[in-house]
Length: 392
Image (cartoon, rainbow, N blue to C red; front, side, top):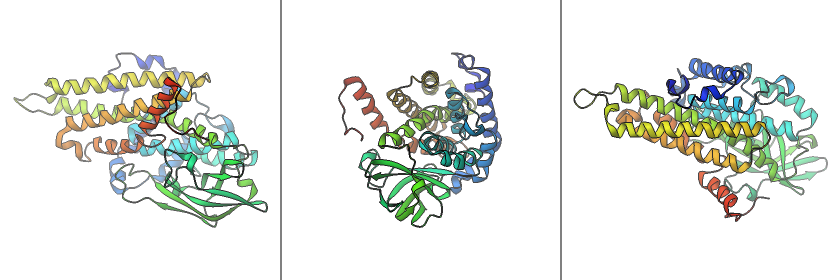
């Protein structure tokens, strides 16, 4: 699991600081030791390894970019590298950390009350508690502005009604950040497990992200106290800001999946003997596939690195995040497809990681803004003309 198996023509490793390399190696070694030996079985059994969550917390991999409450406070590049190494293991593992960090801890830190921050951030950062993010609805994915979930005042309480779909961590979460329409616009609420009127049901029949928990949230006259509101939320823009944080991690994470399938394909091509006793890596068509994968991974790394440097300077535009998410997930998806071709029939069996990554990437290609939606975001940036309804 060394850097591109030692094939670092652009000396990417030298562009990183010592601290960034240390964080990367910590995550990489943990994935190699605790995830890779079991991930195929977990995915086959649709098992999320909840037992690993406290380990993630102990290593400082939950809430890593934040410094409050004793959290590590690593820079954006180091956090990106964490996501990359986690997704080398499995997209579901990276999704868990991304949701916990960017979609749950981030809004609580940004717009929560002091009491909400003090209650939830330490336990979410340690892995003692799990969170989820409830924005997407059964009829509104790419158009969150169409949400139907409502929150109405009843005395000093709030009463929520609605449903959310495709929610990572939903049925194992101790707290859900739920977005609902109020008279003041879209606002966020903290809904705790066990609250009357709140339930979560796992989505069944997934072929993708099988080692991840994906649920539907149901709110039926769910009564919350006044202090469940995230007081700093004032519109849909707050929820979208959370997604932007998560997309940054995805742009890095997808490269980890691409590296995993590339490394497997390169090894397989060099050892699989076919036709006159030669490895299939000796054939031009297989070399072309390997070169394409390698070429695009190198470019994707430079894109992600520059995003991280800009983010640390406070200069990363949301359109640049769309560019990174769109490009690097597409690259990872194409790498998995090419690796599947190189492996032939062996590409579909769990002895190799190819099909698991390929199936996972079908979800990553879609969530946190589909490939097409990010295309339109960039189209608007270039032309100044929106091709879809503007967000609230």
